[in-house]
Amino acid sequence: MQRPQQGVLCAGCPHRGAYLAAKNATRGMRGRVICGDVGCPAVGYLYPAAAACPGGMERLLDRYKQEIPTEPTAPACVRFIRDTALGSADTAELFSADALACEGQSVVLAVLASSAACTTREAIEALGEQLLAGGIKTVAIVDPLDLERAETVLRELVGQGGVSAVIFASPCNLLIKEPLEPAEVDRYTCVGCHRCAQITGCPALSLAPPAYRIDPDLCAGCDLCVTTCRTQVIYTPRLRMTPEQRNALRYEATRASS
Ligand code: SF4
Ligand code: SF4
Picture 1 (cartoon, rainbow, N blue to C red):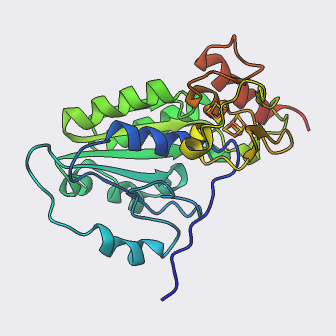
Picture 2: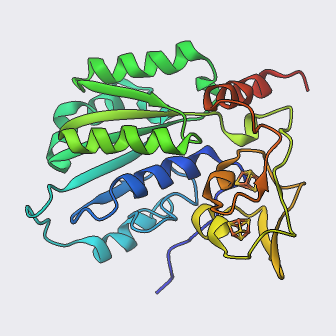
Picture 3: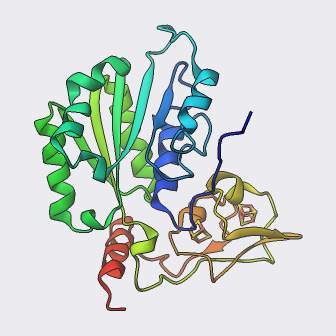
């Protein structure tokens, strides 16, 4: 049997933060399901997502088919879709509150708003309006690269039960015209614990014994790894910026003249 394709998300991909937030916010919940068929070959890379690539879902689902326990915690489902999947009337119905309600006691529709059609605040808010019109009562907009807030919001949505939605708003790295300055590991103080690479899986990070290094040509300056380093030896040129300013910087970089 062919093994399902398992890819690696691009360096700086904002989807990485969204999956990490879903994984962390539902950690320890029996019966949790993180799924979606977004079309990106790396979707679902992080355990326990049930989709790896278009078609991969069929092969993987058997592993995750099990009776959903009602005790001790309510089952939760985080369902990932791309912003472009909401485009037509058919798909809008597919992702309405009524259609999603059967997927679990707590269902969060996670919309990855990173396409070229979603690089303005208006377009992102229009997505939110569309979800509200579909009967979803709570819709939150978060920056997936602001991991702390993304996790908090997702935890709240999962905890409240019923159907809700979160829009992960950050542009695809391939849309960024003006490259952001790379982060850098202080190789003299890095203890080589692997935490940054294990958590983010970013291909720009590699072990060059005894310490980690960041490939400056690959690093897209998303700063996700910076927050994972407990010894705080990954330095970013955006240290003094707030998460909102970093998010705005990414959008500005999509509009920069090439
Ligand atoms: S900042 Fe870190 S996680 Fe982001 S692209 Fe660079 S090495 Fe990867
Ligand atoms: S998490 Fe920090 S200390 Fe650990 S390997 Fe990465 S850069 Fe080094």
